[in-house]
Image 1 (spheres, rainbow, N blue to C red):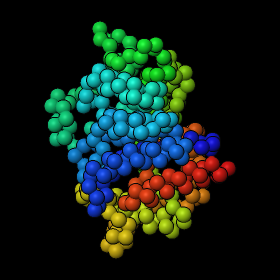
Image 2 (cartoon, one colour):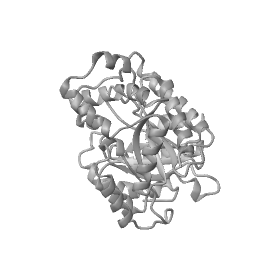
Image 3 (cartoon, rainbow, N blue to C red):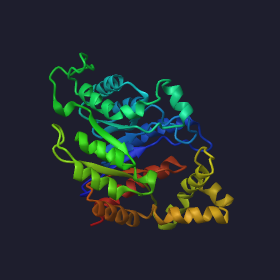
Length: 338
């Protein structure tokens, strides 16, 4: 991929109506192999809990499967919800991942629960108050994941000849000013969840990140990206039809209804009420959905307006082959669009 804007992938292992949840996890690994062949830079996987739609609960396990199935693409978490866990244990896990895919590991962390409060307590009965400890957890994690002694202990395994480039690259993930400021103060890369907020707040978050950035030993310059939701098909009309699946899910989620992603044909037959259609039209005005030329132009314009050199793309579709084709069409179009 030779486009001046690098492309990466976030996959959330979305369950599909008519298919088992386990199939979504296997498809994530298969998609990573596909995206590596297309030239994508990174392949990130998410952490969510107790959700019937997004079933990727253990990014570390998926990353291990992807690590042994790929050779070049960087592999990352987007992210580990750090307040649930011990920073030392996370460091150990990611050093194991680095042993499986040397120099290819991104460690994205966030402080969101990744689920509801009941699930957060099930994950960690002592979770109360740990979100406030997030900045300290990040500092501890940086020390331990580097393989250096910290608080008298070392996170293993360590390579026989330590190499700074072999250290998993720590990223702060977020959708608010908080994450941007923390990443800036600690001299870390930052990824804004544009798709989660439909772009709201992105300009301010990136401005804060760049203006407050303090150079660190590993990152002399700030490095920011955003994650967008996009769907590409051969024509605008086809893409709009395929996007019905996620539109139905977004509308249902606002009503507290969660479930597997429905097929676009089923959604088209069901239709939307007038009130739902008002919501859908608002979503469409902000969507990156269309033909290769349409979406490539939209994304390049967005990246240039925000001063970004890299975009992370998240794509949902009821048919796994539609997703694969979407990523292929987008990669090709980004190379061809001036």
